[in-house]
Image (tube, rainbow, N blue to C red; front, side, top):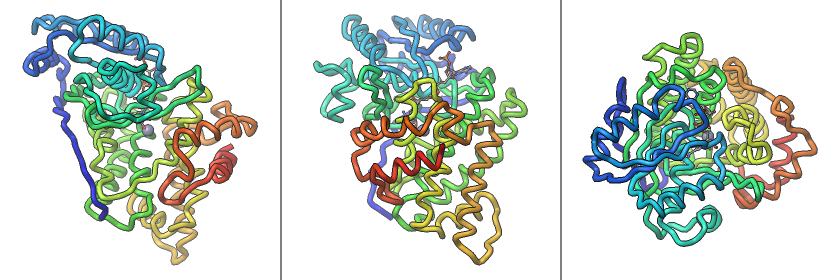
Length: 390
Ligand code: NZQ
Ligand code: ZN
C-alpha cells in the first residue's frame, strides 16, 4: 500500500427533505450572504431554487443568484460569478445542481479569493490562497463533485477543458435528497452511472499491486452500481434505487476508493479532450466509449488484474487462459455501458479520425507526457486508443 493523505471535510445531510435544512445549517456555519449558483433550467423548473431561497430567507441569510451553468461549465460564467462575489461581499457559495454547477461554484470560490484572473489557477495549479466555503444541493449523482477535491472547467477561447484540485474547495455541506433525482432523463441517469463506475475503474487499474482494503470497497461499489442501474432505469421514481446510486456516486469519487493506490486517470484525460472538442458531448457518454478502448490497449501490462476484475464483478469463471479472461472482462464492461444506453463508438459522438490530431496538443498540455499509471502513455499511444474507439 502506498503512503497517502486523505481529507474529507464534507458534512452530509442525506434523505427526503434534505434541502430544507440549507438555511439552518448555513446559518449555524456563519453564512451571511450567499451566491446561489445553478444550471440551465431543471432546478428552476422543479421549484428547487425557490425552496432553497425560502430556506435561506427563513434563516435570515441574504442571497443573490447566478444561473445558466451549462454542462461542461465554461470560464466566462465563472468570471461573472467571481465579480459578483467580490462586489457583493459574498461569504458562501451554494451550488444547486450537478457536477457542472458544483465545479463552476468551486472555480468561483477560488477566483473570489485571488487578485489574478481565475483561469490562471487552472494553468498554474496554485494552492496558496483562501477559498470561499461551498455548500451543495445535489440534483444528479455522477461526477462526485459534491465531496471531491476537483473542479473541471472549459475555456472555449483556448479550446481547453482542464482540472484543478485542492482540498480547500471540497464542499463543507452536501445536501442529498434522492427524490430530487426522480426528474432525471434516462440518458443523464445512465451517463451518471457510467461516470461513477469509471471513477472506480480509474482507481482499480494502476501500477500498484493489490490493496485489499481499498480494492474490496471499490469492487463492492462496482457491484452495487451494476445491481442498482437496471432498477433505477426501469423505475426512475424508485426511492431506494435512487438513494443507493446517489450515495454510491459520492463514495466513488470522494477519494476513499483509491487510497493507497496511485490511480490512473488516463481515460478521463482522453475524455476531457472530447468534451473540449465538442461541449455537447456528455462526460459519461465519452467515458463509455473511451474506457473499453483504453482497456483493450493496455490490458497486456497486467492481464491478471483484468481477469480478477472480471471474476469479482461479472462472475466470470477462470478458463485457465488469463489473456482470454482479461478480454472477456473488457467485453463485459463494454456490454454493461451499452445496456445502459451509452454509445460505444466515437462515430456516435460525431468524432472522426481527422479530429484525433486536434486533441493531442491540448491533451499533452493538460496531462503532461507520459501520462497514466497502469501503462505510461505517449501521445502516439493516445492516438492509437482514439483509433480503437472510432
Ligand atoms: O442545466 P440543467 O437544466 O440543470 O440540466 C442538467 C444538465 O443538462 C441536467 N440535470 C441535472 N439535474 C437534473 C437535471 N435534469 C433533470 N432533473 C434533475 N434533477 O443534467 C445535465 C447534466 O448536468 P451536469 O451537471 O453537467 O452533470 P454531471 O454531474 O455529470 O457533471 C458533469 C461535469 O462534471 C465534470 C465533467 O467533466 C463535466 O464537466 N467532472 C467533475 C469531476 C469533479 N469535479 O470531481 C469529476 C468527474 O470525473 C468529471 O470530470
Ligand atoms: Zn468522471
